[in-house]
View 1 (cartoon, rainbow, N blue to C red):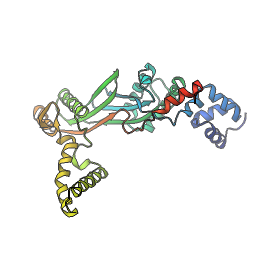
View 2 (view 1 turned 135 degrees about the vertical axis):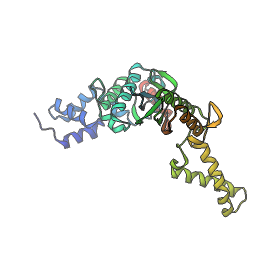
View 3 (view 1 turned 45 degrees about the horizontal axis):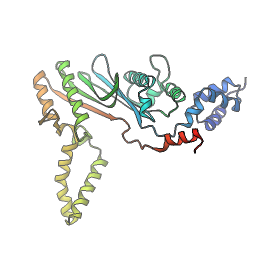
View 4 (view 1 turned 90 degrees about the horizontal axis):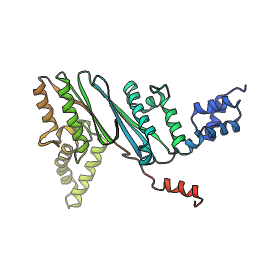
Length: 312
């Protein structure tokens, strides 16, 4: 049998666009023959999958799971090209399986991709095989995990598409030594708030806001003030008050609670602490909206249809 060198694997990877492990396996199956290995990859549908990797995948699902002890929660965003595929049972089950993996290994996408599902399949291989079977580009795009030592993590799924999968999902973690069921219910209400408030929160409090985002908002406010005829020095002083007001609008703890606008989220948490008889804090929250930030290419599907019908 021919020696399967790293250079040989690299050569096949560059020609096929397929992952290193699949290239190595193809070469092993074909005694190191590059052309035969290319054919082997095509018969397995893997080369076809690789060709789709540059197509925009902005549809799909966000899967969410809470651990058995109620103290850990995860979200994973699994993307495809069309909403039609997101309704596929195989696709939905894969998203749920990936969320189970995240519960075990954490919220890092690379770690999840390299881990095995409960069925013993490597996550990245599952995705590659789904691409080859269904015929669309897919991507495990984002993941997150929240945990508390004492308290509860709650999940809210908005626009559910099936069990544990939705178009928008939110996790909220409440830290506290009080009754877990009470904390879980309040955390779920806050998660519903994060999903439904007209201004989705950017951070838990002002100190956690991204400095670049704050700087950009400041520049916008200064420019607006100058365009109204104010000198730059005066405009910059005017802006401080506007920035404080903006921060109150975009940080979770300062936002009016959607179920009771007379009460802020911070006040709701303080009220909960009195109710359970122990300090309660919001340890963190995560909001994943499907396809957020993905540039959609409307011509992808049309181009493929045209090529299939000879109209390209």
